[in-house]
Amino acid sequence: MDLSFEWIIKIIETNWPMFLRGAGVTLLIALIGTIFGALIGLLAGIIRTIPIPERGAKRGFLKFINIILSIYIEFFRGTPMIVQAMVIFYGSAAAFGWQMNPIIAGVVIVAINTGAYMAEIVRGGIISVDAGQYEAAQAIGMNHVQTMTHVVMPQVIRNILPATGNQFIINIKDTAVLSVISVTELFFQTKTVAGNNFRYFEAFFIVCIIYFILTYAVTLILRYFERKLDGPDNYTVVGSHAQMDAGEHKGIGQ
Image (cartoon, rainbow, N blue to C red; front, side):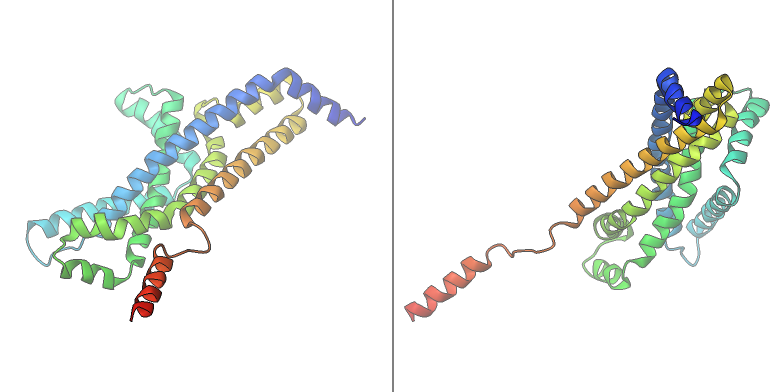
């Protein structure tokens, strides 16, 4: 038996609670961060698609908000999450004296980062809705809020679900960078195990398999729910047979 394989078994047997805790923290941060990030992105995407009037105070207010949102989106999409983690965690302590819990800080960082990406995804989803649907909604007396609530957003939410799921999978992997602020996620725990045993290849080979299992399992779950939302491939129009039978009886009666 290869020596490395023996060490892999030994490391799993003696350190599985650390791997388990790390995987749990990773999933917790990724899930909560993705949910809050999706909400941030949804709000930002909706605001960025509000029509700006030609004049008045509302025009100035919306342009100001759009500038702030554009800065937020471009900054967090244009900088690495590992740098954002360092700036937010240590910067908040230096500037405001906030000693944030590392796990809470990790959730905040993932949520803010995810929100920047989701904002553009939501905005693209809203823009992709056919202009005729907006016109039809206005024709029956709907205002912008009613149009967005009852016509546009149900379609947008369905269309962005795959992208949201992909973002969740990305966040599972990207939580590894949070080890720089001492978040005890999977990568942090693996570094500890590797250091204790001085077996870096074996420890990180194990964590590589764990990350793959986590992401692949989430992928299968998301595909299942997508199929459920898509509905059956073949549809039967309810009442069509009854209508045909009624038509036949009517023809017989004549």
